[in-house]
Picture 1 (cartoon, rainbow, N blue to C red):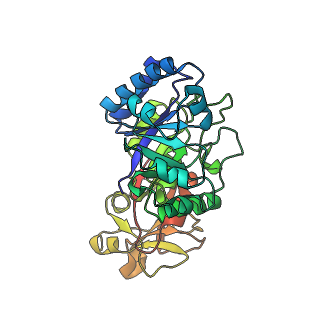
Picture 2 (cartoon, helix red, strand yellow):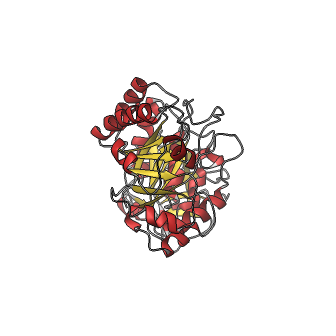
Picture 3 (cartoon, rainbow, N blue to C red):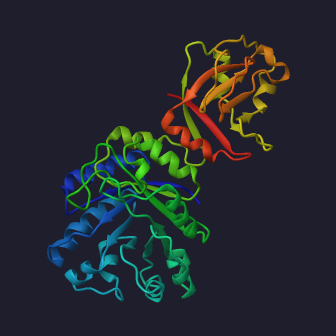
Length: 362
């Protein structure tokens, strides 16, 4: 399943011209879906229709898929019914996200709406909610899953719980989504906004590291920036990510030579299948660079987790083999070339036997 990037828009808390400028900028950086909140509407049906149809039409012209986040009070406010989704179809939306669940049968019936609107389900509960819906023979191609975001510091999901919730949806083959938080965005659905991530561990991290982590789990297809407005540099950073394999940022040591830098950044690395707990071994590179000299340097120290080392001239047939350190050790036959950024070392846990990975020089 192809992976995508998305933004969030809050028409009841923002200016329409600023929203359009933000959507245009996101389109420039190849974002393709929008989470649009309708949880806070208080105006009449006519004004709501005008406001939302205008911004949705604008977004659709730029190729965005737009899903509206709704709650039961919206139906009461607008005097509409879950049994008739024509209102959302008329707005031009591609789907609706159910902030609150029903009995399973209801969601299954909604998935067969005549407008073929996507029904996005809340993923942030480790219960058999999805299984129940599917047992009522729901229209599976029109079901998505999307995690919540959490405006209050200290209230977002812990990682292990996130994995359990996500696996329930991913094993059924549904498209999944989760939120990352901009460090510059100040707009969200409520008057508290300490950032809008799905995972608590992400709240204060650079946005690209949040996204790298989510993609590396292979449980999330769409990553959405929860708060608005993300900066252009954040949009650009996300657009440059490779969503299909882990890419580490490396800080070189001063003595790293040009051959070592080429070994780090040019080849497609993969972890050897017969793994060891001490290091991640990328062994094919030593064959390509077997004739290149590599004088020892930065080799008389204890290597730490996240260090990138390469075999030097004293390592025989293993000269110019690249390794990523998982457990501290010493070995004078290896040169310290650089270090993976501390915030990215969590990604090491997702390099399995035969996993593909790359490096980029930051």
